[in-house]
Image (cartoon, rainbow, N blue to C red; front, side, top):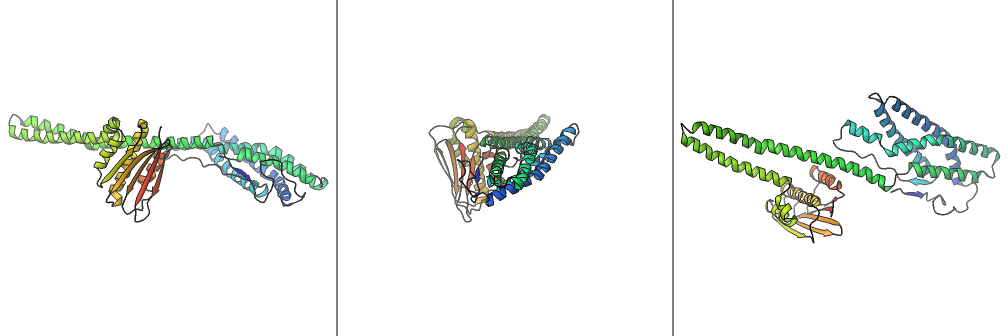
Length: 390
């Protein structure tokens, strides 16, 4: 959301109603005069920069260097905008929030980062500001300079009118966009997190299949082949090998069940979070109390995210907390699903750590959040909040 306000020492600079009367030549008038006289050199530099960046970037766009140059020019335009906001804040009393940074997409390739930079709305609006400022700066500079010489009695009123136009341009083009644009940028970043997480999950499943069940099945096939060869000449050895192969089949089936449970457990689909979390708690190395109080089931996607969030938090309890007991409480509050995991361990959980940091990103991608309360010495309480519907 764009937030603009008046300088506390500049009465009448706000947006509500006409400014109250003030002395003709007070310090605010002199600041406005300074701003208008500095407009021309600043606007000239910004105009030259913008025209050069656009002309060179567009002219070389058929080569490999054109678009990167344009992307770098847009990044530089952000710096120009920051300087102009600072100048307007100091001399015009206009306080404008700094725009959000470009969202960073972890794992995005070179082309993805380049495209992200090229569609930066803040950089393009700043270039538009720099482009249209020059003719206005020539006019305002000339009027102010002439006024200092021949329009002395009327100059404060002329300067005030010119400065109000400058304020409107700063607010209109150098303010952050509305909340919708900010939300779009956040969602684009979140989409990158979701894609990266899905790709990582696929790689994990492929690795588990290759190193686990697949390798075991290959060994099983080889063992059965050897048993088949030995059967005519040594039935007892063949029988022993078949028994061993039977044990391998059981282990392979168990690994496949565990893998399927890690993708999406059947008990979650069939019976919901209460039964799925109870099953999850029974496999934890720490005794876990489970309490689920939900009037209905959330959507399948949210239910799955809630399950895997609780699973990862319980893994952290088992591996890192040295806790004696833990608990999971799940309930609905308004249109949000709350999952709270508490343990009586030593505390000190690192919110920026690999596990919790990644979990925070994944929850943020679906408009959720993770709240961590883990003082040194414990206890630790971690609350995950998700939308009731995806």
